[in-house]
Image 1 (cartoon, rainbow, N blue to C red):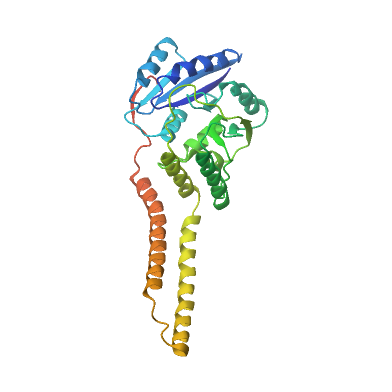
Image 2: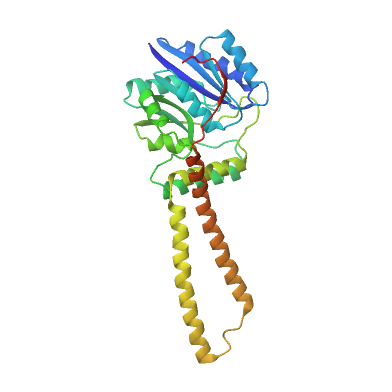
Length: 311
């Protein structure tokens, strides 16, 4: 009998968990010949998420849980879930039901019988999302696919079902700064994409502010492309040649017409432009250096405070 482990990262989701559990168990009950386990990862929640999950575990032996010592982030929660899942197949999905559980049977059949190692989902629209947020999201996917050799599908979700060998490959990438959308693509394997329309949360509020999404996008660019470093170098080369041409032009004009060396306002503008580009280049370099610094510390990706998973 195949076993599917459903990994569910949770951060302040006490309202959504009971609704999710009710819906996912309906789906699992209809999949004959398949065993399920549910791995809830409490990512340092401040509400009653931990108590709600513990209550489910007491009533249902298929419910496993991991509670972090603090908030480590969704990336760490997904990694912890995969590392502690025992299933032949692993599903990662959000608890707010924006990832529809009804797709799991189709995803399972695609991997079980369709020759795929992964069945992944993507949103085909962004209904209900703020326009400015959708605009920046689409711009991010276009940018990262242009500057990175790792293709990331527009609208891709973390919601996916993977074979054990793909999960093991992902776990072998134990980097501290994680961008899972890129990692899923980087490890390769055949993937079937399943599109669906955007669905609103079942309960609670989103934990992803615009600023958090912006920082997450920076992590993705830094983690899967060195193009910004090349860009800063290119800007330096271009400015160098422009300055040479400008110096020659000023000298020639001074010799021919005189008085051309005056004009401190334009000089200030040039200084501000060059200074701004220098700071931008230093900032880009700093992003890569900071990620390298954190990786060299070799800190654990997460710390478990409590779990009912026996090893």
